[in-house]
Length: 167
Image 1 (cartoon, one colour):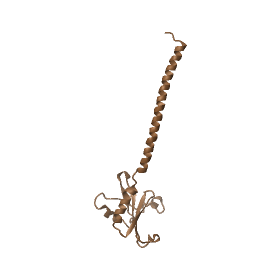
Image 2: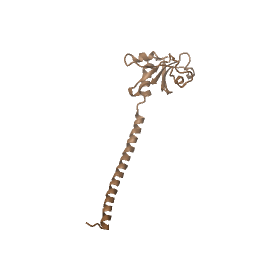
Image 3: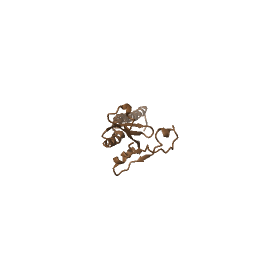
């Protein structure tokens, strides 16, 4: 079989055309997958805005339950702050001017720090104790790390137990 220049060209063109067809199909698939990826990224971003926030889902319900023990007060949630994401619930005496909130027992409070959020775990910061592990004005001291963090018991009257830390 003798090959002519024409047959060589035709052979090349056939292979080149087949290659171009495959390349076009792959590019089309890439484009389609790119569009699907953009849709999935939008869905993922939407999920970020829907994530339950631990302040709203754990701290505020605790605040409401604790506040029932103090009918003459209202609460305010402050935080999270610092390295431990310390979050405080302040119970202010009703009818007291804001400028007098911290005077004469007008404010009771309890502090929480994060445990494992995947387990819904928060810890109570025991501000009645000072371990003095961190020197004054150090990062640890400024972030309240001289106060032990105590796990909330999983059983019993948790709200009554928490009430013992309201100062």
